[in-house]
Image 1 (tube, rainbow, N blue to C red):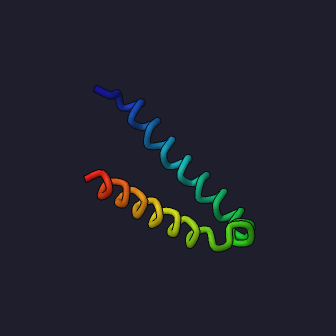
Image 2 (image 1 turned 135 degrees about the vertical axis):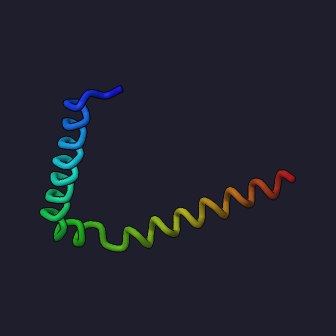
Length: 62
């Protein structure tokens, strides 16, 4: 289905792309810690509230 060249290119692309993502993340780690403080807590609260609102709507319809 795929040629050896296509498979080699796909593997090469995935490895290089992952390396670029890791390098970029490591480079910006100090800025991320400063600017995105408490983001995980806020996202967690929003997810829990969304689930609770969805459950309330579903149970109120039955």
